Length: 113
Image (cartoon, rainbow, N blue to C red; front, top):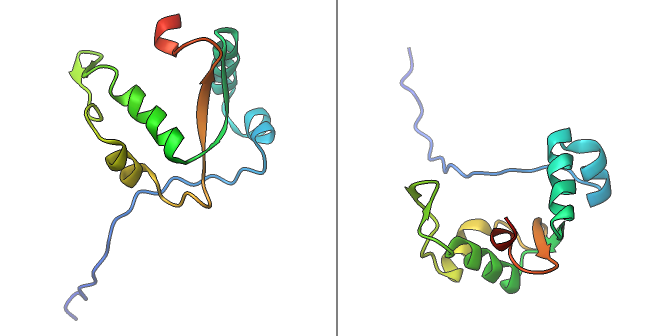
């Protein structure tokens, strides 16, 4: 019996989904409960759409992450991370990727609940 071959491997988390358009994704690809939650969010004045993963978007993510240090009774793992940390962790390929983002008509979701 041969000895096992040792190969260097790097584990990388990848989540990929083929999406032709946001409209097609929201109508045909997602679970009905997601569509229900999207409609509910729209009634609260929020819209969800494709966003470019740019400096402004990362800054908005950072603002949400740093709102509170404890969520659901546990320390929040992303609290206190800098914009640079978030960008390096979340940005896989900003030229090829889009992200789903929220745009609030009034203020943040936390203030409307």
